[in-house]
Length: 309
Image: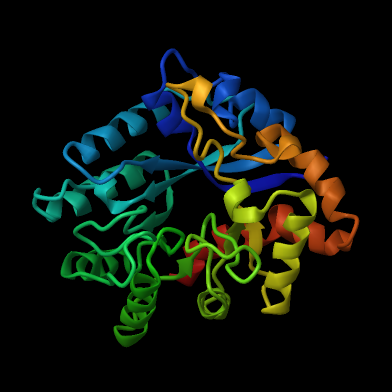
């Protein structure tokens, strides 16, 4: 089977917040058995917290969960910090963010950090915080990330924040690459969470990567919508940038199962789906293009970090 690299799942947060869930629980949609069935060779695990009191403690519990992961017959795992509030609460000293970042990076390599989630925080504006850009603490964190072989993720930024981040990197010649770990394309599915073309082009120009998100609200309602997003990215020059960032288990409310709604398309609802998705991609793409999306682009980018910075 084709090996898969995926840039974003919420397995750690799902288990931390769910009742009686564990690494093999199918309710997570990215359990270890599901990852194995999908032939996922490398999985980025998000450490995330909603901005608020105790956000850094919530993240710490997810790092502790990571330490309990099996070490045999599992994918290669990398970390990501989804929302820098996972590093420091709103009124804690900023230095704690740097100290915790370094400590977590020693536990498992951190591939990327995003400054925000959906809302505004001390670092800047999330994707629902229209018009709110980069704040002083955000600039300080970007400066600290420079040269650490950690990228900056723009998947949950406001457009204003994304533009400010890119400008700050350029103006200060930071050794910091911008990516979008789990984002799609706004001209195809017109919601704010997806990226405008100028941002897609900017990430491609930086030799960053873009992880295709599988959530229905972002991708669309039919399998053909996967192909539409891929085609759009290719038209912008992104053949060597596109990969997967499925966002399992994004959006499911495990505490209130009766309120669930179909967050993912029926055939692509968990990490075991990748062989079926590969078959879909083969209907319009060459083997070389499929290999790039499934694993080559992501592996090339991950391996380049240690030499590029």
